[in-house]
Each structure stands twice: as structure tokens, then as C-alpha cells.
Image (cartoon, rainbow, N blue to C red; front, side):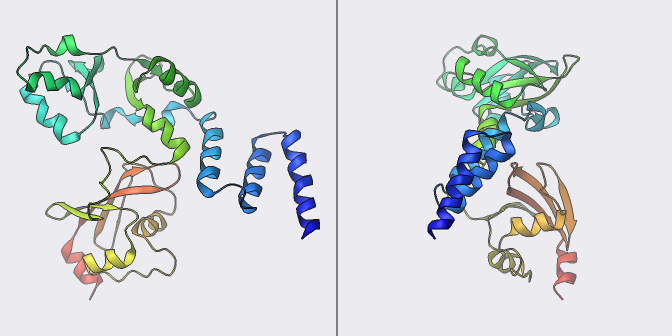
Length: 278
């Protein structure tokens, strides 16, 4: 036992005092985890910190097609239901088209309108920050902290809007998925029928619970959650908006990070599902 610890200390010293690259640092961290010096969450965050310095905004941004925006030409009573439905805290405001982002609206500023105060949307806008899609995440995080911004509009080499990114998107690369307005409250069910035939499902839902809900008979020998099953069906770690069809289910990834899937939307074909379970 003593010899084993001695070898470990020598190995750690060799890496810690003369690390040649990030791969060696990663090996040291994994050694520390194996020896119970740090837990899995700490290992994940430390590796996340190293990864952030190598990643660019284009890798994590919300694509232009998925941006929730407000048109300046609309009256508050027209877009407030949309704000309530999406539940974001900040919205890019556009004039004419998505390429013309003129500012950022904070949802809390709409309280003044609901209280009957005089409200002019254009006067309530905060400046929009524009960044290139090639900007590194560690640089962006530093700028977010320095300028106290929470959202930035991503533009391509021609100046056109290609997406947006929030401070939460960057932090999730370090700490993993953050529970927010997109996610279920802890008290809610794992499976919720949004409308007939469409179900929003937490990826952490146990397969036993999934089988009981849909009458399926998936085995939990290889994976215990529906997220594990869906990832296996893809054959790779899927990203947001990826879709796959199997056994009467059309599954769309709603939320995922670089480590795992978090939320799914399943459209169920009852006739096909019935055939599968006969």
C-alpha cells in the first residue's frame, strides 16, 4: 500500500511540476478522482474550465432559427403573451428582420406596462452586444462579468445575425446543465403531455417509469433512463434539435449539453406503438 502511494506521489509530481499539455493535466485530475481527492462534480467542472478556453461561441450558440425575438412594431399587449409563454428573462428586439437587432428587452421592464404606467418599448431597450462566432468562450465569459451583460448577439463574417448566446450557456460548459426557466420544476412529473400525442420528458426518467407510462417493455440491463436509451438509438451524443424515430416514437432533443441529454419531446404514434407491444 505504501509503495502504491509513493508511486502515485511521484507520478503526480512529474505531471504537476512539469505539465507538457492539457492532456497531462487531465490525467492528474483523473488520478486525483481515482484516489478520492476530488469528487465527480469537481472533476467535471475542472475539465469544463479547460475545455472552455478551447471552445468558440459557434459551438454553443442558439441558432438564429431558434431565437425568440420581439418585433418593435408590435404593441405590448400583442407580444406579452409570447413573453409569458417562453418565460425568458431577456429578449432581442428586432426591427423589420432578425438581422436588425436594435436592443435587448428585460422581461421585468414589462411590469411597468402592466401597472398602467406610460410605456414606450423603444425607450426601455438595453444596448445589444454583438460578437463574432469565432470568439472563445473564456474571453466571452470574462467580458460578460466585466460588463455585467447576460446575453450577446452572434454575427457572422458578413455582419449578419447567426445566433445568440447567454452567460448561462457559457457557464453550463463548466458546471453542467443549470435548472432555469426552460427546465421542469423539481416538483413536476417526469412526463408531461403538452398536447395530444406530444410528451415532454426528462431524460433522467427511469425506464421502468417510462415503460409503465407508455406500455412499452424496454430493458434496463444496459441503461436505466430514457436518456440513455435515446442516446444509444442515436449512436452518438445528440445535440439540441436532433431527431430520431423508433418504435412509434419521434423523439426531438429539447435540451442537451456537451455531456448529456436533459429534456426530450416525444411524438407518439399510437398505432405503431401498439404493433410494437403486441
